[in-house]
Image 1 (cartoon, rainbow, N blue to C red):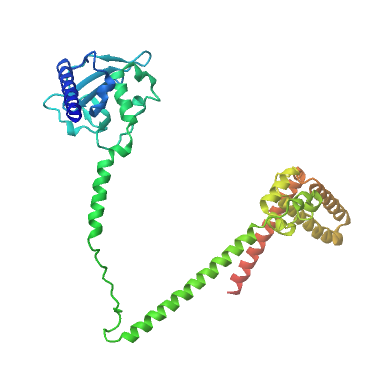
Image 2: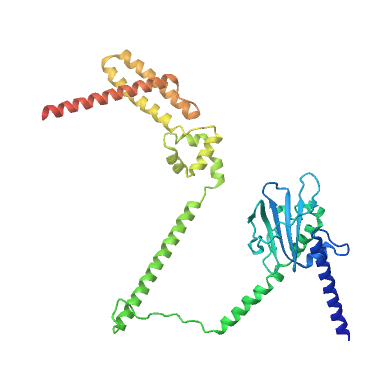
Length: 370
């Protein structure tokens, strides 16, 4: 008797729900006083939300409760509360087909931004319809309660049927015998009768592959040791102890050669130069001064035989250049003087003229000999 009473109660509840849904269908927009939006959400089978392409603040929603379809329109005001408006049926017309609804699809001036179907994978909520990000949705409970109901659904409930179907398929497939893979044991390069020859060739191939693997392993180990050697950094104490006097010993060399002799990395040496206020390694300045001094020495030797006064003037120039070189070694941030730059340019022109004259003489000699 208890069971029968229980079933009769269930039937009565179902009848009440159907009656209320019938009233909802007739009224279209308004709900009965006894029927709350939260109760309605539990019977929701699908929901589609559309946004106007022309007016972004206008939003429409199509709610399907078992066999009843309700269409609503909302006004998403930016500066004030959201409002629900009376909606004329637009998506419930005979021309409109429900299966065609998908996220991103456009129907006239309305674009679909959200689609939910029961027993389907949960959709992604846009920021406009996300309750945590958009608290104004609470102003329109008819939409907010249903969005809350969808967000609270667990994926396990929705995927239950899909998982069952996949598991049953897997179970039935496991009973079936797996197809065997065909493997050719015969070497295609040899005749079918010559089994011994094919075995020998296989052995040779395996030995060759093992030898190659050993080679690759050795090369990899060598590369690792080289990397480890390169990665060894100079101790910080050695770098800190480097003074300007030590650096000045190698100013006549290039910066790369100097870093090798000092047993310091190139970047470390450059950093040290910046600390001492050296913007550029003074190798070129000192080299150019050395060349000029060497040229003046030659001139002085020549002038001593002809004219002593000219030789004395050359010697004075030489002394000036030597003092300038010493100053640059002491203070490498110094630039070469204007007079020395002019003298360097003149010296370069002299050399160039001499080399051209020499070439012309050689060409004349060759032409006369022919």
